[in-house]
Image (cartoon, rainbow, N blue to C red):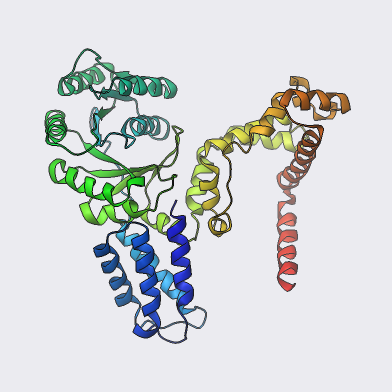
Length: 448
């Protein structure tokens, strides 16, 4: 996500030389490259030009402090303008109402149905809501089945009437059903088309007028770039939606839609989709997105993702086991599963400051843990509980069972032992000493 834009912007800041003040002369080439980077990211020429003019106006004449280079000051100004361009602050969805009704709109293939299920899962697990999913796409039978499968996967009821071809009536009956069952959120998935047409607009407008939703969200495929922004404008002119959802941001997207849709339709981006898993949905934070675009990482989001998987009681139990040297392969496997739930591995690495640039040409397979899991799953329950049982013959059996070789099994056992020692050091108060050792090593590295 945004890799090309990040790289181009980084190169443009390195052009800026000189000391003292940022002037029209020393900033001209940098802004030219910034504008090119935005155009390559599929930002419209008009918005790219306005953006660089605002940056120029804000930057020229600013004092360059002795501790800051002109390039660093320009990064700060561009960061502020990127944040402003994408909306400044996060905007929550309206959850008020009994039930609160959320209408989902968008073109076919934008990811509406998947997002509807993700949103239901988010509201259920993060907000404690009891949602109802409504299958309002009466033209594509696969959409109804898809929503039913996803609803079963996340434990959320799906309301559908497969013989009814009137989405307005389906939505009305679904709301009554939710009221009767005491469900407090209704998410209505609607039909899409391959392109904007009057029939589609009339239908979605009629549904909105009838059910009067608290929130209307327009789902857009971010991989379609500037076309996505134009489609959003056409929908907003007719539908006056409340917010935008950008899907497929984990794909090979140039980022133009994320950067400009807010300024074109004057409606906030509320969510982004970043993968196929039901947990792969993020609230959109303009400042954090600007951080990531400029290679600063997004450590706050990374910590939040970790906290979502963090169970206080389980952590206490695990710490007690570590202190008593009882940490085993079952615990190791459990930790791997928690990491995998946090999302796409390359995207997670990109949240660590400096790692996005370092990993730009590195492919990180989301199945990176597959071999480790296969080895652990090939162990008997007794072997997972007590790694000391793992002698030569057992290792050979495990290697054959997991489709690996004896060297891989030995490597995992060694890594497990080292991890156990490290975790015990931290759990028993040795963490401070460990940090001091790491700092000393960094200082020694810096002297070389």
